[in-house]
Length: 86
Image (cartoon, rainbow, N blue to C red; front, top):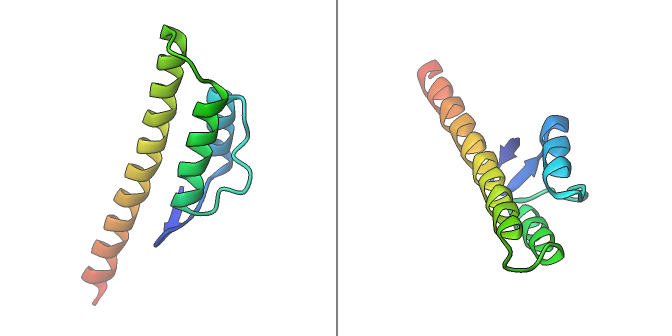
């Protein structure tokens, strides 16, 4: 995921992975807020308390967290490189 402040851009690989996990394409996800809305929409679509539903909600949360962590790590690395160049 590419990130600049609150704006994000999902890579084709990430879009495909989210679609495979949820069955719902992340159309129009252009900010962290949009990503959170997409996650909430998916969880509402797959509602319930069954073991399978809880597992799916967990997978959705894990994927969201992984996306945010990877974008934060990329940003930190970029800041280090820019700081070293100065």
